[in-house]
Image 1: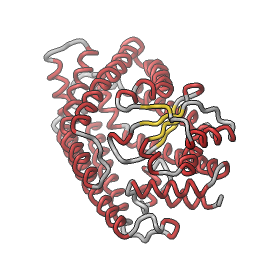
Image 2: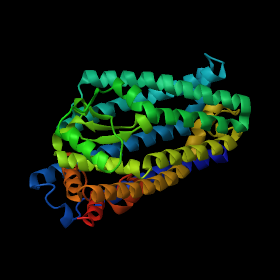
Image 3: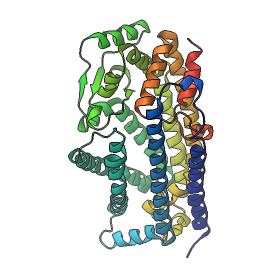
Length: 411
């Protein structure tokens, strides 16, 4: 009933869960660490207690969710639920693409429905209690429905294309799939803000005035052509602040959350945008895209080597090799390599963040970026003392302490 691959996957699932709990334990052990001198003053006594409470609540809730998910996955895997679902769907359809789409559709909606109570509690209890949530129940429901539609349309199309390539070319399908997904990724990088964001948020050009003039003056100073500066209504869902850079060439744009504009001074906002422009000037956007495509290529190549092996499907309770069942088994097998590649990508990402900070410090004023980072940390109740190993493995950005130490070299 159970082949060797079944037990390998079982061990991977257990070790992955145990590793996450080790990271949680290490981070919790550092919660009482003294705040470094460079970070003193970010929280007063009252806000420090609030941050500690927020950290504890989030930590317990995160452990609860991951433990629940682990138990569900373990039960489904041990009882060979993936195989049962495959045969159940097969009672109603026979076309391989439709079979796979229904298989993933049922699994997706089942997982999402199970997760909805946790999502609601996180949004309307935890985030509400600590002053972050602005999402209304109506907005939450509409976001869910829009997410479902996008997942069905995009996910269904991608799966159908991948399966068709597999059907036509078998072991070479990964090359054509990689090409199509690369084009899709590039397209979304160019047009995400134009096509997807408007479904959820309103964007408007940053109005003329002191802030826009200051941004354009800095952009001109560093030789960065920038016409598209937008403000987005992030406050309709959360008080959290953010800014991001998207697109290439004439489609590149900088997007500022209205909450960010409200919280920071003009000088601090320009410093934050100097950091974002630094990413572009250092070619981080392009290099990041190529790295993610390379990672995708590795995954697809390995998938092509294993997908036709009957052992994959057998490990999940299906007697013959089936593409959609093999995808699930491969995804579970891929977990250790995914963790390693994720660690490597985070390492590169943190290096890029330092370089963008350096660009902002050299070309603008480091003290304004430091004060902006401190304000954002305070407003977001950020953990000021994360465990170094957790940062190394999971953080795409250096810790606030590391960034400030680096920026102070330029003061």
